[in-house]
Image (cartoon, rainbow, N blue to C red; front, side):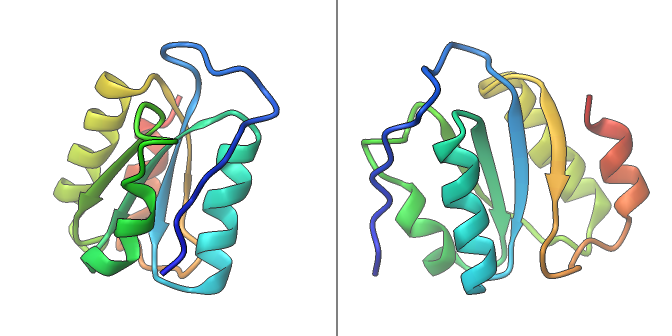
Length: 113
């Protein structure tokens, strides 16, 4: 298991832009998560498997990351993830779905700023 320990190149401010990542467990998805954090963005990660989310429950990034068990095939659950991310971390500017798991991409995009 890899623990994420990032020092962002951009100083974090409360309610910075937030990216929602649909985690499929792939190397690509984990790489995207690291890149998003490295660029100083907040990150909400939604996935169906807890072990894919555990590396992001880390003291070094806990004020910048929200992890949620959610089914990407259920638009209602993804809407709730986006709402929680916006309320907790700041406005959601983008939804990233590297594995193509979202059932309704347009619905998710409508909620992003």
